[in-house]
Image (tube, rainbow, N blue to C red; front, side):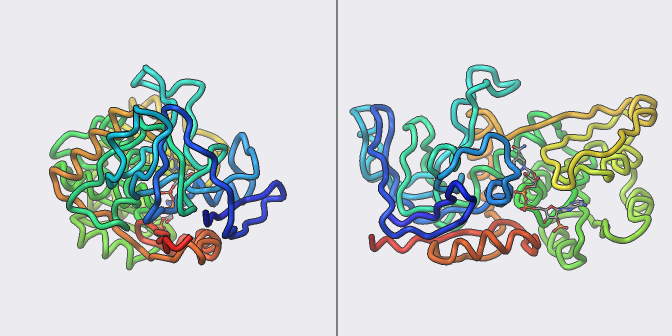
Length: 335
Ligand SMILES: NC(=O)c1ccc[n+]([C@@H]2O[C@H](COP(=O)([O-])OP(=O)(O)OC[C@H]3O[C@@H](n4cnc5c(N)ncnc54)[C@H](OP(=O)(O)O)[C@@H]3O)[C@@H](O)[C@H]2O)c1
């Protein structure tokens, strides 16, 4: 099969003849049509992801058709169009993942390939209203946004929610989900154009976080947010504690800017802020997210589509984060 491999020296290459492993008893082979990029893939190529085990085929998100099964278990899926839940071995506890939890695409070979082998329980039917590109865009970022907003963030209709860095894949889903849930949604971004796009998608407004005093302006316009969804972290976390409503919730799902050097503990406890962590999502989160997307007929924001053969350039482009929403890879099924 064709695949993008990251080798032991963390060099990326496109292989046209990479051998795929045969499916185990509870596994199936999915012939992929599309895959999508996540910041995780970029962190792995930079050596900034815990537990690196290389070589590996990168890629967590994928959509395609089931072509083979390792046993009777997966036979009923053969010929069906699917999306893959990339969260493997979550475990029985919905409040947090088990110690065995890992994400498809390192160490397990992932979706930047023409085929992938996954456990049959990771399969979900492809949403009928989405095309192949949109289907692959959904799994990792959609599940993360879902759990962050609803399971951990307990968002309620009519609340004010602030979503930081709206150009990000997770943030763009959080925006769409929160608007569909009837919240008053505000955003931040480094780009006025991205804020404009967020408003077209239903946000009330936003602030450019690269401008001084953006937080004061936003608080004046939006009022203090009941819920803040943040994937950036860094010193900005203290700014978010400053603008959150008293008794409000801040859910952190990422730390693109690293950890803050100090935490504004005084304002955290004085304002009775709930600081909550969130990672990916349980199988229940994944299923609820898929159902919500189908019920609300939501369509993921696709920023750009690259052929798999140009996937390395797509990964390298992540350094600048110019995107709004998801970057997708398309396979040419000729091998
Ligand atoms: N816990 C989990 O399960 C989980 C799952 C997915 C992702 N993550 C983490 O969450 C983060 C985002 O992931 P992603 O895949 O959505 O990334 P992405 O699509 O690459 O988006 C990154 C976005 O971060 C925003 N950003 C950068 N600096 C910022 C700042 N100072 N303040 C606010 N926003 C800032 C930018 O938004 P603008 O372009 O609008 O400026 C950028 O587009 C990453 O750290 C990732 O590792 C965690």
